Length: 212
Length: 223
Image (cartoon, each protein chain N blue to C red):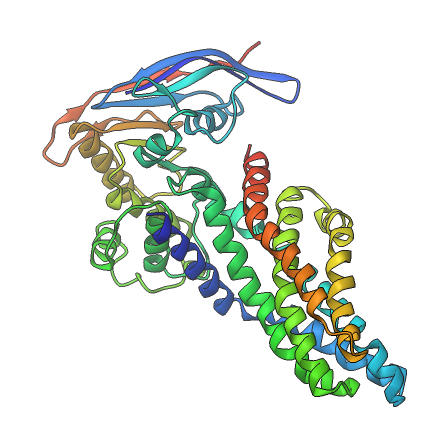
């Protein structure tokens, strides 16, 4: 369970948000909404432990994430604005090296399968530099399929995807939540999660408001 | 898992270096050009050439490794790979040491291998060439390790290149003094043993502390 309590954050002298609290339990999805510049990305980075908060704390399974960093990090999958893809490497090489760095076991057969499911069959060996923006994002999202982490933190996962890929991603998130995973994501569009067999997974909304 | 992650970072960086050959070759080519121009500029006076050879080759190696330093963390920082490394359950200093090792293999080892060939232009004796190569073998990893701290500290700073040189060059001076001094000591008959010991004494703590310092600096840069 992820517990966020009384977080506040500022950039320079400008306060961004204050007193943000929510909990995310296994089998739940949380949609973080908010206007541009209100601090959604900053909040996600604090939740991941990349940036420090001015006040408040983030707890994973009851322990502060700073105290149980290794346990938290092996339970976390984070996708930020930087997709962490290397332009010179192929989609397959990107997936494999990324999994190894994150300490996840991934065989190349599994990676090929994940890429095929993201609609990149036949493009596994193309260097990322010749791919379109949407295909790059599909490659980055293929990592979700290979991830065994229970907590997914996704910053704008639906950006630059075509309608079919959006549906695929929604089904993927729904399946993860239905299996007891947790998803925390930002998006500017309303999102409903439906599994492939038609079951709807409830999505909570949290509206982030800036400090006036 | 730490082992696997270390190898993954090392393999990825070496693979990237193979795919971005021009970047790697620029620094090596710079070293070759500097070392090849000096004998032409100084003239065919062999005694002078022998005298300046260690200094010229060392300064060339030092500047060439500076060229490669700025890119050490830059690309990883921009594309988000560094974030993923910071979020990996594997130890971050270990992952950074894989990056530093890859950097040395790509930018340091070619200099070590080229030095004896370039040294021939300066009429260095076989003995002096061996000493020069060994000194570079011990010294260039120090340049990568100490330079890595500078690269991590200046990451994301505008005009970071100049700042990096200002930060790192003073720290390179002891390496330059003892590295170049080793060849002179050898040719004057004193033996280079003492210089090698001092270089080793700089290398070992640098190898231990540099990844820790880099990781701390990178975490600040990521905030």
